[in-house]
Image (tube, rainbow, N blue to C red; front, side, top):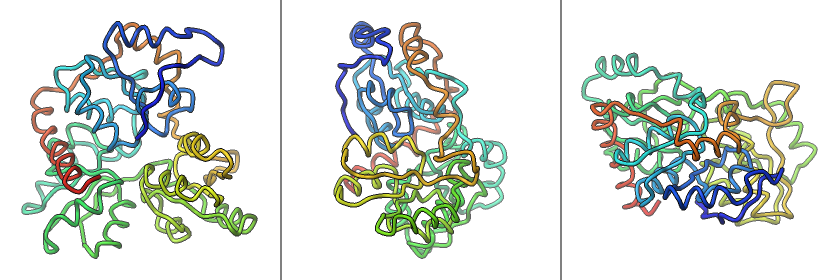
Length: 323
């Protein structure tokens, strides 16, 4: 989670300085996810992973929050800040993982398993969070799961890869929803092995949303923020990075002399793995969004009232654990 300067220029010089004026005029804050394009990360007031963005949204005094990420992140900010205006540069910036867990089907799944505590990954819609007991991110999932008794019956959704990973490191046997992220599902084990052969000293960093076959190749498994923290702490090493390639911008920025190699997907035409939804946000859309105060995130009041409880519970547990 990193505060950034508001001093910036568009690559073309267009709109130079106007963001700062608009933010001051509107009392607005720009939050950017690590998976955004580098140029957006560079002008955001704060850059972080899902947990960090939720934490910043919860405590900001700004009247307007511009969420540069995907739709569920905007929803999370709106649920936490119902009296604030929450904007997103492109309303079409969705999430394949959230889409893999329709609220009606997940709600029915929960009803079919009475007596289970429901833990949902933050990559879900507000409607799914509304039938959830506590939300988690990849940063705090292990610790929050372990905060429950060992014999607690738990439903974990929607990411089966993250759920399997948490089960494996906690000894739990959570009941998993069968969802996944299209980016983290597509990493090629064969290509990572080839790169490792070419760079035998490189450390493999992998996000727990990756398949277990990829995680077995990893030297370090962790959330986006955790992988960044490890790289910054060990800048003398070189890295093969198996998560969305947007994080390489911040990694390279903080470790300019370090070699970072994006792990490629199965698609032979791509050298790195990008989230097509994250890439829908552009500087121009961000500028128009802030200037026109649109598109705006709206969440049904009844859903928001239910969804805010598991999100706040996550933030409270995270604070208690120092996360």
